[in-house]
Image 1 (cartoon, rainbow, N blue to C red):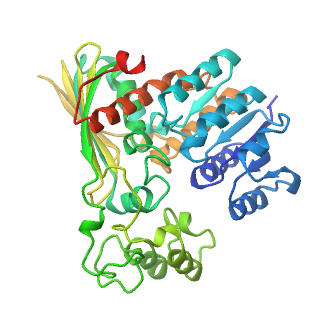
Image 2 (cartoon, rainbow, N blue to C red):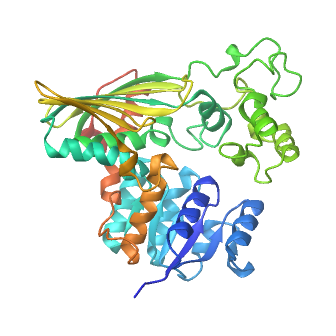
Length: 424
């Protein structure tokens, strides 16, 4: 007999809406009983869309969690610095969690969330969605088979995409590390997680270099005002202008998908232009309060002296991830955007695998958004054969430790950070 899964949502921005959409898409046996957000517009839109009654609409996560337990699962997708306190409060109320990454930008809070989950015997699935993609899932299968021998070295690259950087990490919610998280944690704890998972190894030490190089006032075009559209002489030519990042596609193609839907949920050109004229996404990228890096390199020393070199850079035409996995018997060259894995066996044959067939749904983080919700449903209903989560809290914490250690190294000029000492 199928079990109805009752769910509450805390944080109704882009990610909260993605998980809600996937839950409804994948199962008829899901009931959304309550929701919370500090933004009245987001609260109303979400609640109206899913038929949540007025008395179950809350102005904050704190307000909702002060109530008695009313569901099986709490989906927490609020700003980064609220995750830990809300996660702990929700578990103490009796909820299991789908928790947006990062767990917290504070190491002690990450460890406390994991400790609380263990003490209260609560399931916490952290949204490291890349583990659920067909691309990385197939890569993991090949590595685990021993076909390329023991992994010795990995070279991984994350292309952030120039307008993604401008939207999320210069103008947007994750622009300032004191308000949200360091970029290596917020954007790339995905990568730290996936690299440790793929190698099947633990990190012993880390070093890192990186900085905010371009998106600063001294690099602004001559005469650039505080707000992008206030008669900036470079308005049409600047690749980071609101015209080129948002308005042009909306006007010419009728495009109001991500990231434009973060600026306006009305999905009209009139509302988009109004919000850009008045809100944070209309600021000049050279006159924001951003402090996160726009490029960073991280080197990991693993527990058997295998090495990982990871690069993240904003200055790319397109986004995506590529990886080169080098083992004692062969190598694999992967392109997540193209969804291809080129496998070369030393002294043997080579092949190229198309990983599209390995994914049930390739939308949303290469199918990762679909996969993590399928995993969640598998834990609480009979919708899936899954028996345990790929990204439970115990599996997730190490990636956060490594990312925070990398940030400590970067801030101290590339100092080598011993992971054991860092945790202590």
